Image (tube, rainbow, N blue to C red; front, side, top):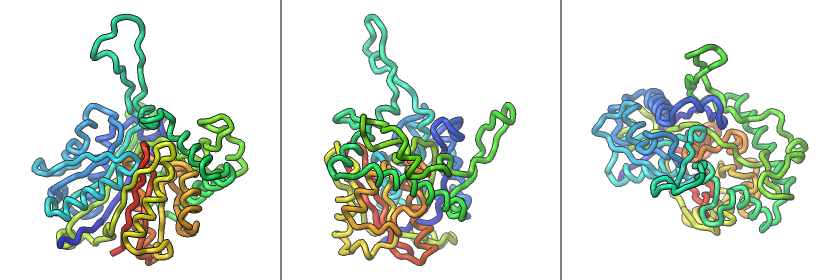
Length: 396
Protein backbone atom coordinates (compact mmCIF):
# COMPACT_ATOMS: atom_id res chain seq x y z
CA UNK A 1 0.00 0.00 0.00
CA UNK A 2 1.22 3.49 -0.83
CA UNK A 3 1.71 5.71 2.22
CA UNK A 4 0.55 9.05 0.83
CA UNK A 5 1.32 12.15 2.88
CA UNK A 6 1.13 15.94 2.72
CA UNK A 7 4.47 17.69 3.18
CA UNK A 8 5.68 21.29 2.89
CA UNK A 9 3.33 24.06 1.87
CA UNK A 10 3.12 27.80 1.43
CA UNK A 11 0.72 30.52 0.36
CA UNK A 12 0.63 34.12 -0.66
CA UNK A 13 -0.96 36.66 1.60
CA UNK A 14 -4.64 37.05 0.73
CA UNK A 15 -5.28 40.19 -1.30
CA UNK A 16 -8.42 42.30 -1.12
CA UNK A 17 -10.69 42.70 -4.13
CA UNK A 18 -9.01 45.24 -6.41
CA UNK A 19 -6.18 45.23 -3.87
CA UNK A 20 -2.47 44.46 -3.83
CA UNK A 21 -2.61 41.33 -6.01
CA UNK A 22 -5.05 42.67 -8.61
CA UNK A 23 -2.26 43.65 -11.00
CA UNK A 24 -0.96 40.08 -11.34
CA UNK A 25 -2.37 37.42 -13.65
CA UNK A 26 -3.67 34.36 -11.82
CA UNK A 27 -1.26 32.00 -13.56
CA UNK A 28 1.73 34.23 -12.77
CA UNK A 29 0.75 34.48 -9.11
CA UNK A 30 0.14 30.74 -8.88
CA UNK A 31 3.42 29.90 -10.59
CA UNK A 32 5.34 32.19 -8.25
CA UNK A 33 3.83 30.55 -5.18
CA UNK A 34 4.20 27.03 -6.59
CA UNK A 35 7.87 27.69 -7.29
CA UNK A 36 8.24 29.07 -3.76
CA UNK A 37 6.67 25.94 -2.30
CA UNK A 38 9.06 23.73 -4.28
CA UNK A 39 12.06 25.83 -3.32
CA UNK A 40 11.15 25.88 0.38
CA UNK A 41 10.98 22.07 0.32
CA UNK A 42 14.55 21.95 -0.97
CA UNK A 43 13.80 20.09 -4.19
CA UNK A 44 13.69 21.05 -7.85
CA UNK A 45 10.65 21.26 -10.15
CA UNK A 46 12.08 18.32 -12.10
CA UNK A 47 11.38 16.11 -9.06
CA UNK A 48 7.63 16.54 -9.57
CA UNK A 49 5.50 14.51 -11.94
CA UNK A 50 2.12 16.23 -11.56
CA UNK A 51 0.32 19.43 -10.61
CA UNK A 52 -3.30 19.70 -9.47
CA UNK A 53 -4.72 23.22 -9.49
CA UNK A 54 -8.06 24.49 -8.18
CA UNK A 55 -9.53 27.70 -9.59
CA UNK A 56 -13.22 28.46 -9.81
CA UNK A 57 -13.69 31.37 -12.24
CA UNK A 58 -11.57 32.07 -15.36
CA UNK A 59 -9.76 35.37 -15.01
CA UNK A 60 -7.59 35.45 -18.11
CA UNK A 61 -7.00 33.70 -21.43
CA UNK A 62 -4.44 31.24 -20.14
CA UNK A 63 -6.42 30.48 -16.97
CA UNK A 64 -8.61 28.16 -19.05
CA UNK A 65 -5.52 25.92 -19.20
CA UNK A 66 -4.43 26.99 -15.75
CA UNK A 67 -3.02 23.77 -14.30
CA UNK A 68 -0.75 23.12 -17.28
CA UNK A 69 0.29 26.76 -17.63
CA UNK A 70 1.11 27.10 -13.94
CA UNK A 71 3.02 23.82 -13.92
CA UNK A 72 5.29 24.82 -16.79
CA UNK A 73 5.70 28.41 -15.53
CA UNK A 74 6.77 26.97 -12.16
CA UNK A 75 9.40 24.86 -13.90
CA UNK A 76 7.81 21.41 -13.90
CA UNK A 77 9.07 19.27 -16.78
CA UNK A 78 7.05 19.09 -19.97
CA UNK A 79 6.63 15.37 -19.28
CA UNK A 80 4.66 16.13 -16.10
CA UNK A 81 0.88 15.90 -15.94
CA UNK A 82 -1.61 18.61 -15.01
CA UNK A 83 -5.14 18.44 -13.63
CA UNK A 84 -7.60 21.29 -13.01
CA UNK A 85 -10.37 20.73 -10.44
CA UNK A 86 -13.47 22.65 -9.39
CA UNK A 87 -15.66 21.78 -6.43
CA UNK A 88 -17.00 25.27 -5.63
CA UNK A 89 -15.76 26.52 -2.23
CA UNK A 90 -14.10 23.16 -1.49
CA UNK A 91 -11.95 23.30 -4.63
CA UNK A 92 -8.72 23.69 -2.66
CA UNK A 93 -9.47 20.63 -0.54
CA UNK A 94 -10.39 18.74 -3.70
CA UNK A 95 -7.01 19.60 -5.25
CA UNK A 96 -5.20 18.03 -2.30
CA UNK A 97 -7.56 15.04 -2.35
CA UNK A 98 -7.17 14.51 -6.11
CA UNK A 99 -3.38 14.59 -5.82
CA UNK A 100 -3.61 12.10 -2.96
CA UNK A 101 -5.80 9.77 -5.01
CA UNK A 102 -3.31 9.87 -7.88
CA UNK A 103 -0.46 8.91 -5.57
CA UNK A 104 -2.58 6.24 -3.88
CA UNK A 105 -3.37 4.68 -7.26
CA UNK A 106 0.26 4.69 -8.38
CA UNK A 107 -0.24 7.32 -11.10
CA UNK A 108 1.99 9.84 -9.35
CA UNK A 109 4.91 9.75 -6.93
CA UNK A 110 5.38 13.40 -6.04
CA UNK A 111 2.91 16.17 -6.92
CA UNK A 112 2.16 19.74 -6.06
CA UNK A 113 -1.46 20.55 -5.23
CA UNK A 114 -3.02 23.91 -4.65
CA UNK A 115 -5.28 26.66 -5.80
CA UNK A 116 -5.29 30.20 -7.08
CA UNK A 117 -7.84 32.92 -7.73
CA UNK A 118 -7.74 36.38 -9.20
CA UNK A 119 -11.30 37.51 -8.66
CA UNK A 120 -10.20 41.10 -9.24
CA UNK A 121 -9.47 40.18 -12.86
CA UNK A 122 -12.60 38.16 -13.68
CA UNK A 123 -14.03 39.58 -16.92
CA UNK A 124 -17.49 40.64 -18.00
CA UNK A 125 -19.21 38.76 -20.79
CA UNK A 126 -21.78 39.34 -23.50
CA UNK A 127 -23.63 36.07 -23.97
CA UNK A 128 -25.77 37.06 -26.96
CA UNK A 129 -23.14 37.99 -29.55
CA UNK A 130 -22.37 34.47 -30.78
CA UNK A 131 -25.78 34.16 -32.42
CA UNK A 132 -25.91 37.81 -33.38
CA UNK A 133 -27.72 40.79 -31.90
CA UNK A 134 -30.35 41.91 -34.42
CA UNK A 135 -30.89 45.38 -33.04
CA UNK A 136 -30.82 47.44 -29.88
CA UNK A 137 -28.55 47.25 -26.83
CA UNK A 138 -27.24 44.07 -25.29
CA UNK A 139 -26.22 43.21 -21.74
CA UNK A 140 -22.68 43.01 -20.40
CA UNK A 141 -22.77 40.44 -17.57
CA UNK A 142 -20.35 40.16 -14.66
CA UNK A 143 -18.95 36.62 -14.60
CA UNK A 144 -18.09 37.09 -10.92
CA UNK A 145 -21.76 37.71 -10.24
CA UNK A 146 -22.46 34.26 -11.69
CA UNK A 147 -20.17 32.74 -9.05
CA UNK A 148 -22.01 34.38 -6.18
CA UNK A 149 -25.54 33.36 -7.18
CA UNK A 150 -27.30 30.07 -6.58
CA UNK A 151 -27.72 28.49 -10.03
CA UNK A 152 -31.24 27.32 -9.15
CA UNK A 153 -32.91 30.26 -7.40
CA UNK A 154 -30.53 32.99 -8.62
CA UNK A 155 -30.37 34.18 -5.02
CA UNK A 156 -27.05 35.55 -3.89
CA UNK A 157 -25.20 33.15 -1.62
CA UNK A 158 -25.73 35.66 1.18
CA UNK A 159 -29.47 35.18 0.78
CA UNK A 160 -29.04 31.45 1.34
CA UNK A 161 -27.28 32.34 4.60
CA UNK A 162 -30.34 34.43 5.47
CA UNK A 163 -32.49 31.36 4.81
CA UNK A 164 -30.27 29.28 7.12
CA UNK A 165 -30.50 31.88 9.88
CA UNK A 166 -34.28 32.04 9.51
CA UNK A 167 -34.81 28.27 9.42
CA UNK A 168 -32.65 27.60 12.48
CA UNK A 169 -33.31 30.71 14.55
CA UNK A 170 -29.78 32.13 14.39
CA UNK A 171 -29.52 35.65 15.81
CA UNK A 172 -27.83 38.70 14.33
CA UNK A 173 -26.01 39.19 17.65
CA UNK A 174 -24.47 35.71 17.51
CA UNK A 175 -23.38 36.25 13.92
CA UNK A 176 -21.83 39.65 14.69
CA UNK A 177 -20.08 38.19 17.72
CA UNK A 178 -18.55 35.55 15.46
CA UNK A 179 -17.50 38.16 12.90
CA UNK A 180 -15.72 40.24 15.54
CA UNK A 181 -14.07 37.14 17.01
CA UNK A 182 -12.77 36.10 13.59
CA UNK A 183 -11.07 39.48 13.23
CA UNK A 184 -9.56 39.42 16.72
CA UNK A 185 -8.27 35.88 16.25
CA UNK A 186 -6.73 36.78 12.90
CA UNK A 187 -5.06 39.83 14.43
CA UNK A 188 -3.62 37.67 17.21
CA UNK A 189 -2.37 35.12 14.66
CA UNK A 190 -0.67 37.91 12.74
CA UNK A 191 0.90 39.39 15.87
CA UNK A 192 2.22 36.01 17.07
CA UNK A 193 3.82 35.23 13.72
CA UNK A 194 1.63 32.14 13.27
CA UNK A 195 0.32 33.29 9.88
CA UNK A 196 3.69 34.61 8.71
CA UNK A 197 5.07 31.07 8.86
CA UNK A 198 2.78 29.99 6.03
CA UNK A 199 3.11 33.10 3.85
CA UNK A 200 5.70 33.92 1.21
CA UNK A 201 6.09 37.51 0.13
CA UNK A 202 5.16 38.39 -3.45
CA UNK A 203 6.39 41.43 -5.35
CA UNK A 204 3.41 43.54 -6.41
CA UNK A 205 3.14 46.80 -8.37
CA UNK A 206 3.55 49.92 -6.25
CA UNK A 207 2.28 52.86 -8.36
CA UNK A 208 2.77 55.29 -5.45
CA UNK A 209 6.51 54.69 -5.60
CA UNK A 210 6.73 55.41 -9.32
CA UNK A 211 6.29 53.72 -12.66
CA UNK A 212 7.48 50.12 -12.63
CA UNK A 213 8.13 50.14 -8.86
CA UNK A 214 7.21 47.15 -6.73
CA UNK A 215 6.83 46.32 -3.06
CA UNK A 216 6.73 43.10 -1.07
CA UNK A 217 3.20 41.98 -0.20
CA UNK A 218 3.27 39.55 2.72
CA UNK A 219 0.35 40.35 5.06
CA UNK A 220 -3.30 39.37 4.63
CA UNK A 221 -5.02 42.51 3.43
CA UNK A 222 -8.56 42.25 4.82
CA UNK A 223 -7.92 41.80 8.55
CA UNK A 224 -9.47 44.68 10.51
CA UNK A 225 -8.44 45.98 13.91
CA UNK A 226 -11.62 48.02 14.42
CA UNK A 227 -14.25 45.25 14.33
CA UNK A 228 -16.26 44.91 17.52
CA UNK A 229 -19.72 43.39 17.98
CA UNK A 230 -21.03 46.88 18.72
CA UNK A 231 -19.65 48.32 15.50
CA UNK A 232 -20.77 45.34 13.45
CA UNK A 233 -24.28 45.69 14.88
CA UNK A 234 -24.55 49.09 13.19
CA UNK A 235 -23.92 47.74 9.69
CA UNK A 236 -26.81 47.49 7.25
CA UNK A 237 -28.01 44.06 6.08
CA UNK A 238 -26.36 43.35 2.74
CA UNK A 239 -28.89 41.08 1.05
CA UNK A 240 -32.33 41.40 2.57
CA UNK A 241 -34.37 44.17 4.18
CA UNK A 242 -34.34 43.47 7.91
CA UNK A 243 -31.86 40.64 7.37
CA UNK A 244 -28.95 39.46 9.49
CA UNK A 245 -26.10 38.99 7.00
CA UNK A 246 -23.82 42.02 6.68
CA UNK A 247 -20.38 42.88 5.37
CA UNK A 248 -19.12 42.34 8.91
CA UNK A 249 -20.28 38.73 9.30
CA UNK A 250 -19.67 37.51 5.74
CA UNK A 251 -16.50 36.52 3.90
CA UNK A 252 -14.61 38.88 1.64
CA UNK A 253 -13.76 38.67 -2.09
CA UNK A 254 -10.07 37.92 -2.63
CA UNK A 255 -7.06 37.08 -4.77
CA UNK A 256 -4.41 34.56 -3.61
CA UNK A 257 -2.53 31.33 -4.28
CA UNK A 258 -1.46 28.40 -2.07
CA UNK A 259 0.23 25.02 -2.56
CA UNK A 260 1.29 21.89 -0.68
CA UNK A 261 3.41 18.91 -1.69
CA UNK A 262 1.68 15.54 -1.84
CA UNK A 263 3.55 12.32 -2.41
CA UNK A 264 4.51 8.82 -1.52
CA UNK A 265 6.17 8.97 1.88
CA UNK A 266 9.24 7.06 0.76
CA UNK A 267 9.67 9.37 -2.25
CA UNK A 268 9.44 12.46 -0.05
CA UNK A 269 11.72 11.17 2.67
CA UNK A 270 14.20 10.02 0.03
CA UNK A 271 14.54 13.69 -0.91
CA UNK A 272 14.86 14.81 2.69
CA UNK A 273 11.29 16.14 2.99
CA UNK A 274 9.56 15.45 6.29
CA UNK A 275 5.89 14.43 6.03
CA UNK A 276 3.48 16.57 7.99
CA UNK A 277 0.03 14.98 7.71
CA UNK A 278 -2.06 12.44 5.87
CA UNK A 279 -5.66 12.42 4.71
CA UNK A 280 -7.54 9.84 6.77
CA UNK A 281 -10.96 10.18 5.13
CA UNK A 282 -13.41 12.64 3.62
CA UNK A 283 -17.10 13.05 2.88
CA UNK A 284 -19.15 15.02 0.37
CA UNK A 285 -22.90 15.38 0.88
CA UNK A 286 -25.74 17.24 -0.77
CA UNK A 287 -28.09 19.62 1.05
CA UNK A 288 -30.95 21.86 -0.13
CA UNK A 289 -29.38 24.65 -2.20
CA UNK A 290 -31.51 27.29 -0.44
CA UNK A 291 -29.63 26.54 2.81
CA UNK A 292 -26.25 25.59 1.37
CA UNK A 293 -24.60 26.80 4.60
CA UNK A 294 -26.00 23.72 6.34
CA UNK A 295 -23.54 21.57 4.34
CA UNK A 296 -20.76 21.17 6.94
CA UNK A 297 -23.15 19.70 9.53
CA UNK A 298 -24.12 16.46 7.72
CA UNK A 299 -20.66 16.25 6.11
CA UNK A 300 -18.88 16.30 9.48
CA UNK A 301 -21.44 13.97 11.04
CA UNK A 302 -20.94 11.45 8.24
CA UNK A 303 -17.17 11.72 8.55
CA UNK A 304 -17.19 11.12 12.30
CA UNK A 305 -19.59 8.21 11.89
CA UNK A 306 -17.44 6.59 9.18
CA UNK A 307 -14.39 6.75 11.41
CA UNK A 308 -16.15 5.81 14.65
CA UNK A 309 -15.06 9.10 16.22
CA UNK A 310 -16.68 11.75 18.40
CA UNK A 311 -16.06 15.48 18.41
CA UNK A 312 -14.06 14.92 21.61
CA UNK A 313 -11.54 12.96 19.53
CA UNK A 314 -10.82 15.97 17.29
CA UNK A 315 -8.09 18.45 18.25
CA UNK A 316 -8.84 21.21 15.76
CA UNK A 317 -11.76 22.17 13.51
CA UNK A 318 -11.86 24.80 10.80
CA UNK A 319 -15.11 25.41 8.99
CA UNK A 320 -14.89 28.00 6.25
CA UNK A 321 -16.46 31.27 7.29
CA UNK A 322 -18.43 31.83 4.12
CA UNK A 323 -20.85 33.48 6.52
CA UNK A 324 -20.82 33.57 10.32
CA UNK A 325 -24.20 31.84 10.16
CA UNK A 326 -22.46 28.70 8.88
CA UNK A 327 -20.14 28.48 11.89
CA UNK A 328 -22.69 29.45 14.53
CA UNK A 329 -25.07 26.86 13.10
CA UNK A 330 -22.41 24.12 12.98
CA UNK A 331 -21.38 24.78 16.58
CA UNK A 332 -24.97 24.47 17.74
CA UNK A 333 -25.72 21.34 15.74
CA UNK A 334 -22.46 19.46 16.31
CA UNK A 335 -21.38 20.65 19.73
CA UNK A 336 -18.04 21.99 18.50
CA UNK A 337 -16.13 23.60 21.38
CA UNK A 338 -15.24 27.15 20.47
CA UNK A 339 -11.75 26.66 21.89
CA UNK A 340 -10.88 24.32 18.98
CA UNK A 341 -12.91 26.06 16.22
CA UNK A 342 -11.30 28.51 13.76
CA UNK A 343 -8.64 29.72 16.18
CA UNK A 344 -6.68 31.82 13.68
CA UNK A 345 -9.40 33.69 11.81
CA UNK A 346 -11.08 32.57 8.62
CA UNK A 347 -13.02 33.68 5.59
CA UNK A 348 -14.50 36.74 7.33
CA UNK A 349 -11.16 38.15 8.47
CA UNK A 350 -8.45 36.58 6.31
CA UNK A 351 -10.58 36.19 3.19
CA UNK A 352 -12.14 33.47 1.06
CA UNK A 353 -10.75 32.87 -2.45
CA UNK A 354 -12.55 29.55 -3.11
CA UNK A 355 -9.75 27.77 -4.97
CA UNK A 356 -7.32 28.67 -2.20
CA UNK A 357 -9.33 28.40 1.01
CA UNK A 358 -9.08 24.64 1.52
CA UNK A 359 -5.31 24.73 1.01
CA UNK A 360 -4.93 27.61 3.46
CA UNK A 361 -7.05 25.72 5.98
CA UNK A 362 -4.85 22.65 5.56
CA UNK A 363 -1.70 24.71 6.18
CA UNK A 364 -3.23 26.19 9.33
CA UNK A 365 -4.41 22.82 10.64
CA UNK A 366 -1.00 21.22 10.10
CA UNK A 367 0.70 24.07 11.94
CA UNK A 368 -1.78 23.87 14.81
CA UNK A 369 -1.31 20.11 15.24
CA UNK A 370 2.48 20.49 15.14
CA UNK A 371 2.49 23.38 17.62
CA UNK A 372 0.16 21.69 20.10
CA UNK A 373 1.07 18.02 19.64
CA UNK A 374 -2.50 17.31 18.54
CA UNK A 375 -3.39 14.37 16.34
CA UNK A 376 -6.54 15.04 14.30
CA UNK A 377 -8.12 18.01 12.51
CA UNK A 378 -11.32 18.37 10.53
CA UNK A 379 -11.58 20.82 7.64
CA UNK A 380 -15.02 21.56 6.25
CA UNK A 381 -17.04 24.01 4.21
CA UNK A 382 -20.38 24.60 2.56
CA UNK A 383 -20.52 24.69 -1.23
CA UNK A 384 -22.64 26.89 -3.42
CA UNK A 385 -25.51 24.99 -5.11
CA UNK A 386 -25.99 22.86 -2.00
CA UNK A 387 -23.17 20.61 -0.83
CA UNK A 388 -20.94 20.12 2.17
CA UNK A 389 -17.43 18.64 2.29
CA UNK A 390 -15.38 17.52 5.27
CA UNK A 391 -11.87 16.11 5.44
CA UNK A 392 -10.08 14.45 8.36
CA UNK A 393 -6.31 14.86 8.46
CA UNK A 394 -3.89 13.35 10.94
CA UNK A 395 -0.44 14.55 11.97
CA UNK A 396 2.39 12.15 11.11
